[in-house]
Length: 253
Image (cartoon, rainbow, N blue to C red; front, side, top):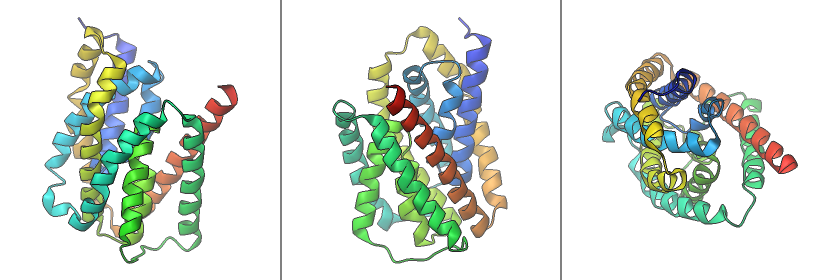
């Protein structure tokens, strides 16, 4: 049983983009690839297809972003609140309009990135504030569960710390490895994939290591300022996509 050509090509492209972002920046930009999958399938099916493939991407990424690249003090703040945030996001889906959450997060992210570009786009080095790390982990857990976009809250905490490009990417990769492991069960339960969907996942699997490796090669070529500028630029793209999704859903819902 082979998948139809168009869904296969679309899903492969989406998986490649997400894997490439993981290799280059550590993750957090899955929202860039999800709209690609939505060209050939509904959002629930897209999320269901990606959930196990995220795990495959995480396994490959571990070979590049090993424990030596993680910021342990930040991980201790972020990860417990991430899990709590994912649980809160699951509950919020039943009581709040997800599109309002998307709009709010988009506007906050645009303000954050805009202030950085306005200040001259320099790599900052501000002191670590534990309360901000706890809040960032919680907010990222909510948005990654509700809108597939946990990157902005995490980036808004990590980028101002001025971490080296390797430690920034490694810590981000660890964060989303944990997030994806927690989310895979709920997504598979929600989507109830059939045999055809599992086959589509399997044939897209080889794209994951290729995307991570090519992204990692790009990471090697970027210096500290180039990587931070790329991350802030991607934050703007992510925020604009969130804003579009939020406004479209709110106005037409």
